[in-house]
Image 1 (cartoon, helix red, strand yellow):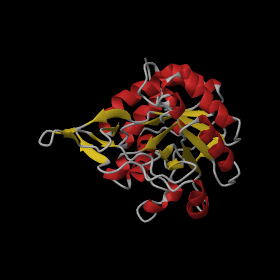
Image 2 (cartoon, helix red, strand yellow; image 1 turned 90 degrees about the vertical axis):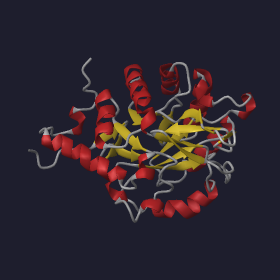
Image 3 (cartoon, one colour; image 1 turned 60 degrees about the vertical axis):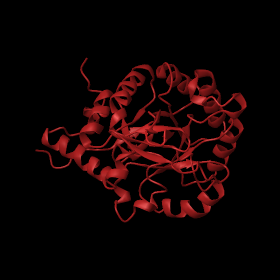
Image 4 (cartoon, helix red, strand yellow; image 1 turned 45 degrees about the horizontal axis):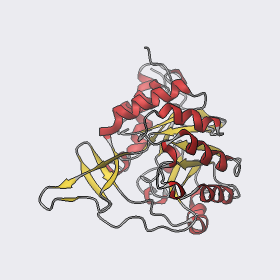
Length: 306
């Protein structure tokens, strides 16, 4: 049995010590987990979604537990760019783990402006662009719903930053491979998927939605088969690296996505159930490789036989 397999992965020139990342919105700004997790053992950290100005998000109730998952309608609550740079970056830059900033905007100009400002913050390893947000200039349809609008926002962000540019795709589309090819053409360095699926829950006694926002994003084990299928499809259709998200609770779950072709995984809802999930998954992948005498995690990435 191997003593220590190589866990290093390379995402378009960015080297990570292992393929386990945190998913935006589920790990705060990392400091919230410092007493529970050795943050320096993670492959990368992606902080919660950031906008130019602070946002209070949606009113409660904002989270509802569902069968095999959860619905959230947080509404991208965050401290805003200025407070993030002043209050959050000083802690993050002390870590030995690279961090990404997930960004969103109400229009293309906001995305571009935020990317330009973040490009000047030297410690940031990369930007993850959330294109699941509604385009207020086009009637509220999400930027990621159509190849054309996805292309436009990614191209605008690409023009403002030289950092690694990861684009997070929405599953609430007809053909996710078209969106993936579009953001690749616009200059994305990598793609992460999937974001949450739109869902809702009703209280039968009050006959009201359990979420104040009526609908929310479904995450957790319930969406894993859908995420796995979409990741595999996108891997077949783009040349840039793919990072998997969606219902990854265990090392076994993560390994499925790696075998399907993802070069790394992001851990989201599992952090709410088990705050140490990320480290458990790192250890679990390493144990899997060691027991099977696989010397390098690269040997299992994209090894699915069809």
